[in-house]
Length: 339
Image (cartoon, rainbow, N blue to C red; front, side, top):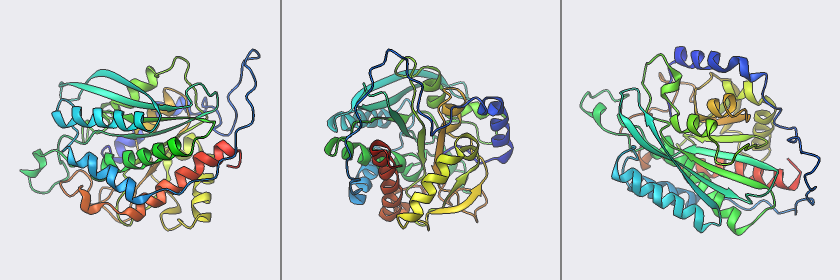
């Protein structure tokens, strides 16, 4: 997850403010050319149970590779593993390789990993998380530890772990609707305290300008970032409320109805320049961010954020279950026409 400087976040929002009004309403169907064949109504598929143990195992497997920093062996090995997992679940996998320049001037060899279910379906939604981990632990108080890469259990691996489990469910409980799962690279390689929001979320920026399918559209997107920590608090993030307020409110209402109101709290929080910002403003697909924003920390994020403490000790199966079951319900209800 990117740094939490409110000054930078507000600058990021100003960057895209002129585009927000141009976004399509997330609840509206995409316009269909007259020549398009009308699809048959989707099969009604019951919402499957999200397996928290499985999701936890997917998180642990990523962390076991080591920090997934671009240009490292751990990054390359994890990339191949993630692609193989998505493919094993029945997704059509595309590896979108690109080179990005970090704020330090270093060239980063990066890959966005895209897994598409029902790639020919017109009705689609987008689910995403970032799979890289930060190259420095800049929130450590110990100066020597600041030079170490972040393990990234929560900040990166948790969202990917939840989406891998949803991908497994889509393979075993298929639906007719299209679902694209994207693991964005180079989200967490930006400049802490810098003046440009664009030093962050490099993979999302690249994909938003170069989608894996020409003319790609989705009804809406859901981004998962830091969704695994014990006692997580998911407030309604400010940029999400600008891009797709009705979608946010529907998901939070559904979460309360499902018994997860202690996680999905009925409160708003400051805007965050995260991957969803660039998908919304560049690709013009309204995307929201489910992100842990505690109310009582100096950074606005969990105390383990961008430190060596972001390891498996902070991960809670209950939190993974709460997020995973809610997002699973959204996907299957959208397919069934009941969301």
